[in-house]
Image 1 (cartoon, protein in one colour):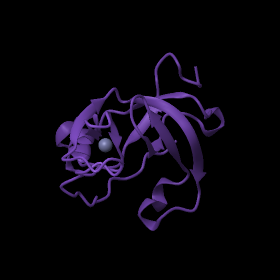
Image 2 (cartoon, protein in one colour):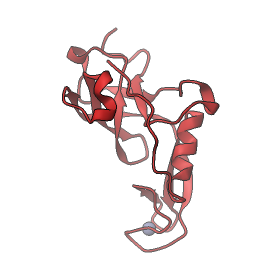
Image 3 (tube, helix red, strand yellow):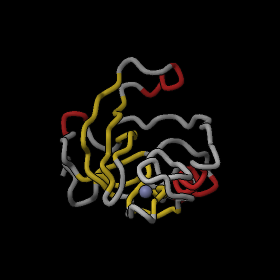
Amino acid sequence: MSTLPKVAVDVTPESRAFWDGLARGELVVTWCEACDGHVWPPRDRCPACLAGPTTTRVLSGEGTLYSYTVVHRPDPAFAEAVPYVLGYVSLDGGPTIMANVAGVPFDRLEVGMRLRLRAPEGGADGPVGGAVFEPVPGEDATA
Ligand SMILES: [Zn+2]
């Protein structure tokens, strides 16, 4: 049930909107207007149709757990957080992204459960880490 510590991220011009969005508690993805679809990971040109530049869209912040694993042998940067959950979260209207899943006991994790982006600790001025998802209230597997 651990959340991962904040670590320095490699922010590129293409990924800046995503990281800035996370700091505000929003999921921002790059979008191809020509294909009318998301572009993930963030890029300034669509890899499918080569149109560009891409734009951005703010998603709802909710999604569905596609798959997950409980990590016991972590990257050294996350050694004090074990055990923790890494999951693939299929975002509503967007891509499937890897993220930390917290706030639910391991034995209550279920593929298909509804999740939402957790508000950033420290607010918009706090340190930026990876996306952390938690169960949607009322659809919580622990309820
Ligand atoms: Zn496209």
